[in-house]
Image 1 (cartoon, rainbow, N blue to C red):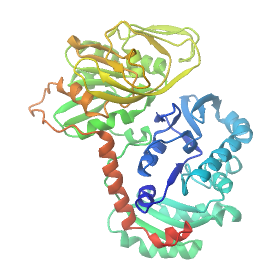
Image 2: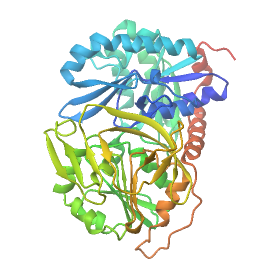
Image 3: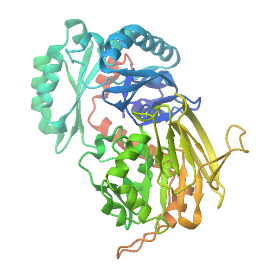
Image 4: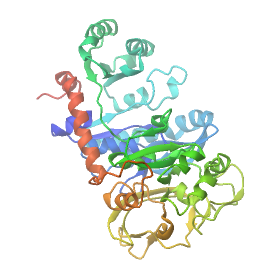
Length: 476
């Protein structure tokens, strides 16, 4: 919201999050992997070409307290919690943060830096490079933002400030009370008392904004069984390690009910199935079998459309070969779902990261997307797409069996553009009494951009802009 507000006023801003933990990542134009939310922030700030400097350290959880660490867009290594804080942070970590902040300071009017969690985690305070250490490196003033909806916002704000050492406390120039449901004015008395106790002004009381934007992590799914109330019932397999789930967001703009399927009956009663991406194809495929969902998917084969994306596409093949134990916890070879004759294999610790444009081979229409995956596939099926970017028109991608309505691709974001989304949805025959509603399929980027404007409008309505601009050192 702040980025879009400043963009409207003519400022060139860059987002920055030194360290982000997320399985929801995207690929820059130069083929570097960064967190999805920094890409979204860059879009809000009007930046057509985001770069790895905006999220130099990305942590991608693999399970058992181990994360893959991605540095400046490339895989760096796997770390557990002790080795990350004891070896990585004091070693290369701080220097990585510094050089990327320095780059952004040289190229933009302002850097809007996002912290992570709480800036007052006293158990790891000296090793926390995501919050006040990053602010210290950038010599940045800070605004403490509190989510009122979670409750205890006044205690959180006051306690956070009290736990900070004096040199960091001095950096906090304002407090924003965010996401207020109901009448914001009811917070005024508490805000005044908070300012008196902390000695820091509350510069914003922001109303709740009912705006649909891509979610940062899978916490958005916790406790949620389905979204929407449309006539087309789409079962999205709720894999334990689901990744890049923003692939699903364009479906919410259509006449759909998206069911997060965690049992066989969800698949058997669906009008279509999507097997999404995952951080660990092998482990999630074993869960798919144990849950009975694998058998349910085989049961509906040829009866309803099935789409696999990235790891889900790998599962649709005949075999999953991991002879070195790169993807799974142990070495092994597995029989896949057998929907395609393709074979997925992992023979080295190497990640494919690339942005692509492609056209649908049968029916035309363009898609744009990105690949982020370990492992490759030996494809034995008819290809789904022809690559059109980077002068690679001789390359094809994905698999399709149109007579059985089976589709698979490594491309994340394949549903963002209307062409393929419309093609896939047109195959669905709703079982319910409601006929499908023919809606205009929109470019999802345009939907997101419109919603960013709405969010900025709501945010600005509760923000003391004079106070914000004063913190930024701007006189208008």
